[in-house]
Image 1 (cartoon, rainbow, N blue to C red):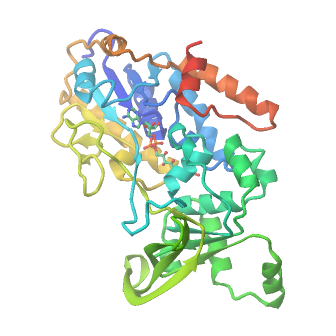
Image 2: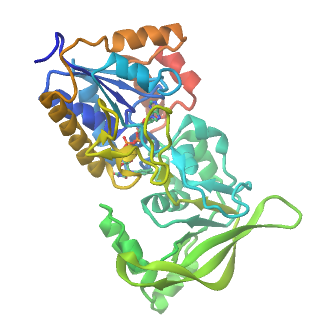
Amino acid sequence: SFSSGGPKVCVVGSGPAGFYTAQHLIRVLPVMVDIYERLPVPFGLVRFGVAPDHPEVKNVINTFTQTAKHSNCSFYGNVNVGKDVSVEELKQAYHAVILSYGAEGNRSMGVPGEDLAGVYSAKDFVGWYNGLPSCQKLSPDLSCETAVILGQGNVAVDVARILLSPIDILKKTDITQPALAALAESQVRRVLIVGRRGPIQVAYVPRPRKRLTELLLKTALEVPDEKEQERRNKASRMWAFRFFRSPVEILTNPDSSRIAGIRLAVNRLEGSGERARAVLTGEVEDVSCGLVISSIGYKSIPIDPSVPFDSRQAIVPNKMGRVQQATGLYCSGWLKTGPTGVIATTMNNSFDTARSLMEDMESGTVDISAAKPGSQSINSLLKKRGVKPVIFSDWEKIDSVETSRGEARGKPREKLLTVEEMLQVAHK
Ligand code: FAD
């Protein structure tokens, strides 16, 4: 039996996980779902991760927009959960809370020199060219010829492609204007994508861009004939996979703090197939380069001390999305599974979490008999704390400013780059 007005649920984070979880819930039940998002703008990594030259991937935004505009769904951007409002306060206000705040931390390489100028995480580099406000100060130095990317996953390949793509292609995308200007001046001609293991292990990475992988592997493994070798020698830009190598140390010129290269350890494989382990041979190899981008993975971080967190796996410990030892608390997306898989994977695991919650409401594990105040009480807390949420129609103002600025430049969108400017437009 539903309380008057139906159960109230909130979702933390408005990436694919947040939106797909909300979508599944409102499709099936008369629940009210409120989505709280730290940034003034929605969609998470669809906006700030997916490469600008893959616009078709961003079509999911249309579905998310339909969900946001559903009468049983509300969006509250500019609300940093864990800071502006606690998870405990959300639990008081709602029958259930679903954490879907993704994986905003970064795995570090743990090698000397990692903090030098010229060494970036792929997460920050991607955030820079995609307009993530916190990454705009990065302005990477692209005056060198060789860049080394550590890691051989999807993101590494995205970064390599953006570094080497012709400007004429990029300028028709929603890549930010500062990134476009920097890439137009870039001297980077050669990108090495370095991995600990071999081509067979790369091939095991589950990804929908299987054909791309096959092409990459073919190019990487094929011994070129004379004509092909000549073509490659003449090519102004090139990339290559470098297998069986691990970073040891970032090298600097003796007279400067800028990077001069990277020392790589040479590995060999123990075992075979997907499980094969890279072990050191003791040999090392130095590669000259002026730019190192580490793309060895994202990781989730705890946002509230009251929420269980498994720091070894960097996820919220859960069974089918039910947070362990925390009735009424759920998780979905990368926070639930770790930072692997594509939007479709995230969609499926978010639907699973929604199903778990629906089962628990039905069985009475989650008590929905008493009415809960929902956004009403949270909004008054936020008001007291001087936080002004950005609702979905406010986001649509930002969206329309961005698309018209983009139109003027022949791009689908020109993103606003600071939280201040976003809030100005939203609350005009
Ligand atoms: P996210 O998308 O990260 O969403 C989390 C949201 O939570 C964010 O909006 C964040 O701002 C918000 N948040 C964080 N902390 C708080 C807080 N304290 N309070 C409130 N809100 C908070 N998949 C594809 O299918 N195709 C691709 O081409 C593709 N390219 C990718 C490229 C990159 C560089 C990356 C990193 C991933 C890519 N993916 C791609 C994978 C896809 O982006 C993920 O599967 C998906 O975004 C995970 O969804 P999520 O909702 O769990 O996390």
